[in-house]
Length: 496
Ligand SMILES: [Zn+2]
Image (cartoon, rainbow, N blue to C red; front, side, top):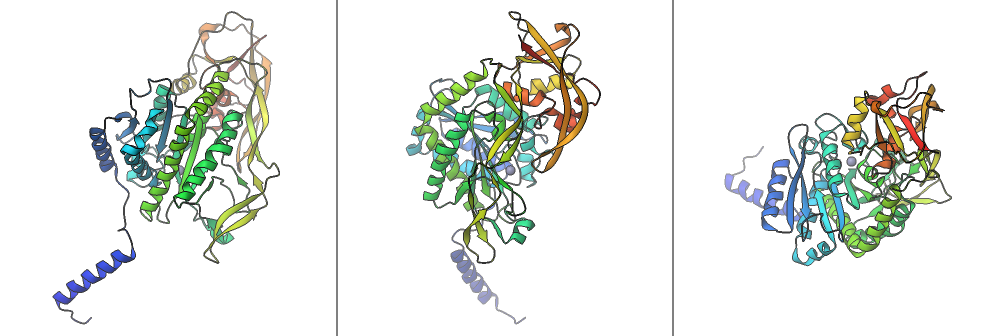
């Protein structure tokens, strides 16, 4: 290498640095780490009276999970206001959620945006999984996928989130994630998704039909319009594919994720999935963060505009949960199906380097129930089954005395065989379970009664029915409940 005088080298370095700064309009940014994030939250808290903070729990590795609570009054106490909860980064390697959340916090605290808080109390949890975030990995410190943990609630992070939810019973919620479009099978197909932010609503058939159609027909189109105005491509969150190999669906209908576990309590609930970078960590992080912030901002603006209508709709759906109706059916097995609708999926073509629309022949946007049960009054759990009772406590389920004003009927399931059934491409247990009258006299001393007329009542039915493809029996921790040639230990209670 030729010898370059030091002075010339320095000059070249300056010119080169200036040039590279010019070509990249902004210097490359990195996601903010846990310590700095906590500091930033504290700084905002000390500057603004509208903001207070609450440590809602501690992670496996001992970090704080902090909620930012925005209110013009005493948070959560004004019944005329709508209560909104956004939470981000359950998956630690989806960095842009917390970045977007902090942009949103700063935006909301600006004078011209504070009017949104006239009609709402807003809680924001930028980082549910700081342990995963620090290691830039999906799972938490116990190697658990938090977004599959909302039914069994074995992890401190999901427990904290649900306790916080139970404290305020939020009426609107959004769970913020990222998706990766860069898989090999899509590359082979020649196209990949190129949506900056994908938006999904609740799909479980037990979520109020009013809330589901309102989400799809009013909320999501508004949000997508706002995103477009800000220069971000958005589309309905529809996993599956690539086309011709696998069908495209409107996400899962399982209730073990952040969106649907609140949706099943008749919350107007969403998921947002920003597109991550090829390195998932820092690539394009400023743009990714802004996209997430614009999506969250759009939902806040929509909720503010329609606060009364949403509040009424949620309240009506929730009230229905407290009204016993034996003719009401609860879906415990469902499939994705088509209703004649066609889909043109916006994709990026590896060949042309442009975005394009691709016709999807196997599109299944509808979730159709294939097995229902009648709504019971509740379930009896044997007192010796401490694992199930601990689960009920983690969910915050109310226990009560058996109703005494009516003649009760008790049934239990006899498990003849245990087969399997397809659930979104995976095999899951499907017992042949026969519902039989409980022959012995039921001594209430030996059982705890979990009534279904409570916020988590429908969740309870889905969790405790042995044939439910979303039930507790489908988890290794509870597979012991299902044994061939025995009675399922949970007793179903109905009335004459
Ligand atoms: Zn995720």
